[in-house]
Image (cartoon, rainbow, N blue to C red; front, side, top):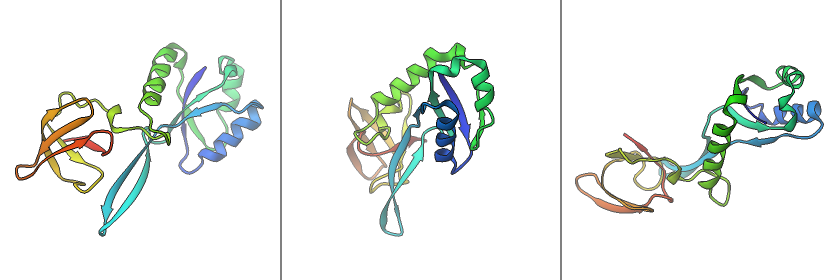
Length: 165
């Protein structure tokens, strides 16, 4: 059964070890991340950011047992976990499968994960146009044509990260 847990910053590895000690068999964790690049002081810097902040999905067959859940509630590194998750197993699994579908070969979530159907303007988060706002002219499956009024460019939506403005 999947649960959603919130962990303390910089203590995820400690939490994983605590789970392994308590449950004997290490649970499966799913922790989706984004990888993007920004230009900082004329250098290209790579950043890795968790998609869900300090939340992570955790699967273990014994999570159906209420006593086990009460015991893991006080593990070192754990802030809290959501109750009522039993009713949302299909939704959790659907989200995890969607994330896995849009992961690259290194396990990072690709830009195509985000659906920008109704968006008219975007701001690049990576690449040479970082922080520049563009108006969307044309959308295709894997490409997008945009303009900032002076420059028109077509780019691969899988290669660069951007956000809606």
